[in-house]
Length: 462
Image (tube, rainbow, N blue to C red; front, side, top):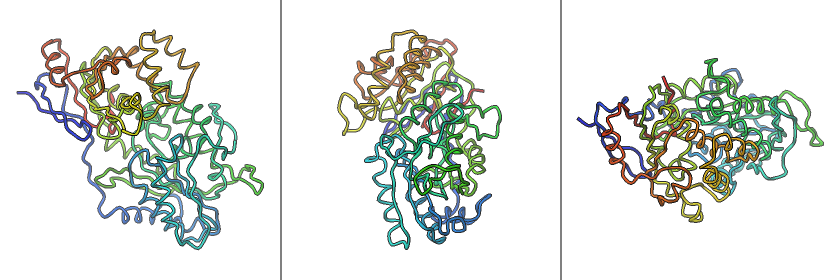
């Protein structure tokens, strides 16, 4: 009897069947955990009342210049709830000044800080002390060089953060395709860093086997701690917390007080939350994310995978994330993958860009270079990318390595013109069921692994 599947395809579902003997195992998709009881505000408040390794926020901030760091809107989440909860705690301690810093990294402020700026201004309205809202402009001039990481990354850090003697991080955790986990460290680099700093750090992503999902220096498993990308980001945050700008705006070494709030959340609620010492709660966070989203699986010859809904499925650029998160751990070298994603893009981007990348610049660096290097040897591809590295070239590098080093053939079922799909080395598929049936009929012993919402899970080979 065939097993029936229904995977996410944008706002719709894509249904198909695979004979049970041809399956490598059950469907892999995000686990349905049990949300913590109570509404969001109550859950956050209770966590803030019982911080680990730190006094409550109100006890840290009296007469201090406080920096409250929020993630931006690149990923949907509970940013508004986090800001309001932390501002309330800060206000009780009566600081000298409060700065809300939006960790936009290299993202477009007009898009990814728009709502958060409004929420922040609403949260501080009427407070009896000075407030300021700052969104990071990576191309701006408001950075101070405080040195380099041990890996040589120049640390140009946002002046607004460095002028705060208490720093409070409000974060939501998940897996990350290069840093291993999205953690508090990332709110400093790339979140509050210059483009020069971000570019230098991101070159560590070319070590695609170690700067990878599930690997991070905070992980309790020593075999999963080595990650050049993550180590550099950890060292950047640690360095930033040693410096404070003096009255003349020069960096001086000073002990900075820190506080973190981190959680694992989805639309269904909050599943894990901790507050207190940022280092301690980050170590606990990696285990919490693993419990919810880590899957061990034997590699198979064929993989059918959906990255999930918007924005993961909007472009080939965004779809690539699930290659690192799930596909690479699930597929055999020499295997074949069918990626199910509409790649319809946003209507506000040019037609030449739509479905390939989120904007013209990322399309130029990611897609145009992918198309240009498609027929070159892996050696030539790697040499070109290393010599000409720009921010979005890490995605090009990873797709090429998957295709040329791991010999994986990647088919794409989408709404894109098939000829455009071919330009990047992908193979257009006209029917999901026909693709599956053709491989079943080969009777070559290859089995199928099926993955839904591949951007939200980590698949590690057994």
